[in-house]
Amino acid sequence: MAFDVAGDIYGIDLEMFDEQVLAAYVVDGPEPVLVETGYARGVETLRTGLRDVGIPPEELDHAVVSHIHLDHSGGAAALVEDAPDLRVYVHESTAEFLISPDALIESTKRAMGRHFEEFGSPEPIPEDNLVRVGDEGASLSAGDRALDLVYTPGHAPDHLAVWDPTSGTLFANEAIGSYYPRAGVWLPPATLPRFDVAAVGETIDRLRGFDAERLALSHFGSRDDPHAEIDTAAERLTLFDERIPELYTEHDRDLMETERAVRSELVDLDPYHDDIESFEARFQTRGFLRYHGLIE
Image (cartoon, rainbow, N blue to C red; front, side, top):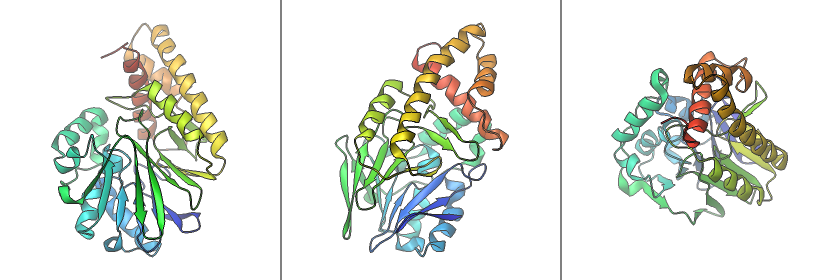
């Protein structure tokens, strides 16, 4: 399902596990730009959404992969099949995992466990389609429009946000966390196997500096009070960073009991699908505990 964001910017609900969990965004124009390519099993939903907003997949010129986690990069290979000249922008440190995705697929299976089947496995992307972005970022020229690709590590060491000064839209993607609109809940961008709380804090401070009119989030949707939302993301990061190690101690360092406590106290996503609460509780608990060296 496609939805309006602002002017010529549209969102597409990729319906991963449930509605309003994962979105891709498209900036329409002479050279359409897709921000986020979604997951391999969601490609047909993405294609339908693109057509709904008047952009056939074969007419895409640019696609930004915010980071290589398979819910963000998994659809890219199929889109290259649709549009063989598609330019796919990704951080240089992880571009090789899109060319040869086997190791990425195996890592995702370990991180996601039984939830992996929802993602699906992507095909390799030809190296010639990739545009490698360094830590200094890059400017994406799309006809008469320029978008800034901004290096925003923490959730992942290769994460990119996208700034569109024309519309005032900051595509924060997953840099500062996830917002579940049906539950009204912000969650930090914890993940496995690597998650850097300090780097997320620095990224939050960096994104405060943009004069944005709205945030566009991979998980999920457009938010029209960017400064307040960024403040909330920072507060939730601090809360989880303090509380999860406390819960681990309170539950005698029992990991499963800690996950249950985190789910009950911090991750309440009713009315979303139960699987979403399950993997979020796992990622939040283990992501913060690993960062503090409390588990391996």
